[in-house]
Amino acid sequence: MARLPRLTLPGHPHHLIQRAAGGQPVFLAAPDFEAMHAALVEEARLHGVAVHAYVLLPTAMHLLATPGTAESLGRLMQGVGRRYARFLNARSGRSGALWEGRYRGAALQAQAYLLDAMSLLDRLPVRAGLAPSPAEWPWSSHGHYVGQRSDRLVSPHSLWWQLGNTPFAREMAYAQRVEAGLPAQKEQALLDSALYGWVLGDEAFLQALQARSPRPLVRGQPGRPRTTVG
Image (tube, rainbow, N blue to C red; front, side, top):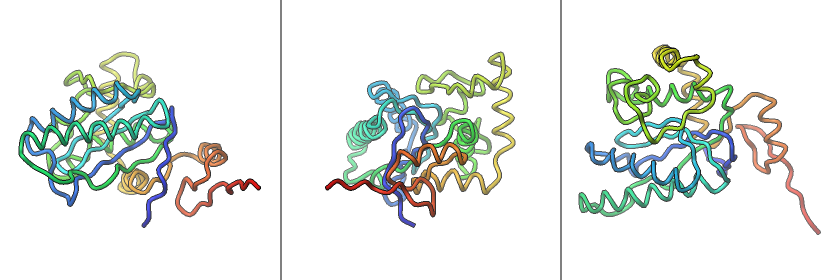
């Protein structure tokens, strides 16, 4: 199934996926994960991207991030890719492409999908058999949101603050959401959205965006007709 042309919507959260070339691990040991985390912190600051959640897996990384401009996400991903390639090549003597082409991703309606997407990212290490629980995988934002540690990469979305009136209440509410998990169909919809570029949102949200977009936003939907001049 072909991917749609990438569409970046400033001010809206996006689920981004960057996968390793050939499915080969690009994060092999703790220093590798730490180097990518540091690169994300610096590049997100440089390019005005708020990273709400993330998970680093041996063969991929997922981000939930809101860009400040239409160029912010592309610059973020280019920057972290270059920084990490320099680090890994210097550490291991590796050469050649690290990543499976350009990153994939799509915007989503925060009110309807953000917290579910955060839960999905937290559970990916469990789904992949890397950890028995989200709390036991250190390379994600889960620990920040359940009070295990403070993560300087994470910028909580306003919806996070609505989970409770105190830090403890928010942490408990979020931990319960993650523990409950998502229906398999919703998990797959979130993954397919990012992999193929389909925007996720309710009908009103999608209609408002489609009126301004020349490309279709969801599977099986025509885009806005192109305007010809002359």
